[in-house]
Length: 472
Image (cartoon, rainbow, N blue to C red; front, side, top):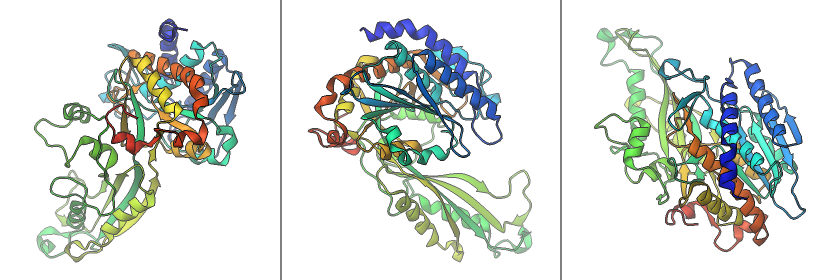
């Protein structure tokens, strides 16, 4: 079967279904209507049934939007099983005045579609649907399809798969919540940084005191906090906390010009840190002050500030232990005494990073499939973002190879105003995933399950990152 021609014939229907799905404001955050989330759930179930999927279940977990679980049996007893993942919930739109069109009115843009959630992750739900349609509901592998409804906010499902491993057992999984580094550049994401949060607090006075009468001697809590935060980075902007892992990155990454545009860096401003962008964004740590409690400029009084607090977000190397990384930051802050004042440091939540094994039959099949889908040589990238469920799925199916690719691209504006997806990326991702199932079914017998990780040429994702771009 000519997959490219088949997918081309399906694109009009896939576009229409993507518009239907993105018109639903399925925000699974507290305070938003739950009925919209359920509406999106029901539409995805309807689309799966229409694509020939007969076995569909609804998984209900505490305080969690329903998870869609579906199965397509393997065509033969020796055919492999592939798990396909996506999510139907979306981020809130944020400041709607920054959108060029209403966020839940799918709007045509050059070569694509603009709407909240159109790239993250409803386009990838449509990718799975397109693959099913391309094969008439009978792909060359067995399928387990997992579409969750509360990925963006976090839920009980993150930790659920290891408690029900038989349900999630498979030979390989495609986590379609990622995409290409840039449009038209086929990309496998092989590493995800871990994340942790820490709150640091300073209290110096019982209440504010006149800055004219007391300033200059009374300890200022905000100045103390600023002095502490300034120690987290050196004069170049590199993280200066001991014990946080950093390694050289030699895989694919952005050019500086691409990064400046994507990050909306002001003209003439330097980027923080030294070394390659890959190290700063993928294989090294980052500390960001994501919140600050202090008097606002608008409501400022002429008084010494008695109390101030900051929330820090830490991103760390995919293979570093989350508690080890968080505790390194906590220890750094606790040993500080800016102006002789002790800090109150509260450790927060952690989330592990992830590194995929490379070099097994599923990885090789994915590289061939991405070439077919996009007509170019694929590369490996790391991501500073995190997908908590990946580790849970990997624990439930420890012998399965994990592949992260999809219809998003790094320039799609996910979580930002005016999020968009390109139809060329959607089409390429459908072809690539369909081709992956075909190639994996054909080559699966060469090395399966846990053996794949030890097959000749198999490597850790970090090893792939140190190989020439696109090498395995």
